[in-house]
Length: 399
Image (cartoon, rainbow, N blue to C red; front, side):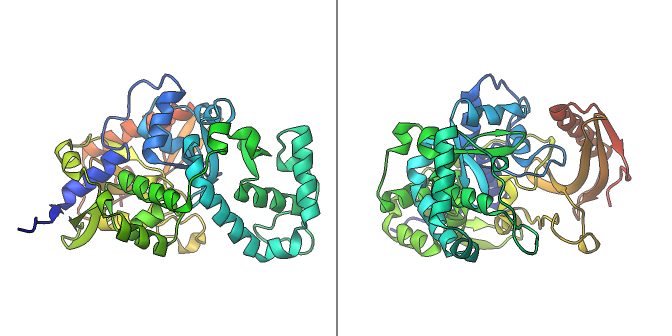
């Protein structure tokens, strides 16, 4: 008799996803050393980097959301001192555990091929220029873009980069160079073989083994998902490659039926231990969490909408007149529901957080208890950057 397909209702699906993302518990506990922080990064798989410092930069906020004893210097220490993470490109610039490096070599090759197809690479970079820059780094040690003085020629357009910056980026994408460390978020480049430990730099796997690892590790962190979600997790393999893997690795996953936020059901795949994961589920903490726009829990907007019925768009690059919400708007998570959005900015010199916008989701009643929980979270968020005052430039009652 054919076994029935496991059905995962929407409540359990939401809780599985949040638990796997480290957002189901209390976000407290000791963070006594690099190994504790590495446990968080390994569980997530990667942490996206971003330059914008609205309150704190996205990578710091993401880690703080999992453990609120995290402080900003800790990630830089993992990279520059302990060499336990490396930087490269998933769907965007990110840090990954250094032991993942042997499985990331296909992504280095993919990114190298993509860069070489770009017009700016084909028309503006010469091998001699690349060699000269690499020789300087070999001789002088890690260098940042300020160590070079080539200028943008012609019309200066948005995102225009001088030749040396293009060359550094090209060699960083290909894996010839790696991020040695950062100073005030400025990237320093060094030869990859001097940054990545030999046991990781010199280890290689076949392309098939790398795809297998990438797909299995993506599904492990998703708990369940479609083939598209597996592919988008790392963005290090193509959709056809994931489809081929799925046809050959049936023992790595099991089919399930998944309920969406709107009550509809669809087919998906889950880890082989999905039954044990469901049995181990606990009710998430009822606190309100301020979630970063670049947090991996909300990065896949289609998955976010399907599981939570929460339609979120990052409007930083939308002209102000066309924004529905605001420039840097944080989703608000309460338990296993997204209940609203918050716009808040920091003045580090004054030690203040200023709330400039608050919106509730439809069918969410904004009670005094919710307002107090938000106030508590804002106070915790402020402590991350040493801001002890929260000011309101909008109504405490959300729109």
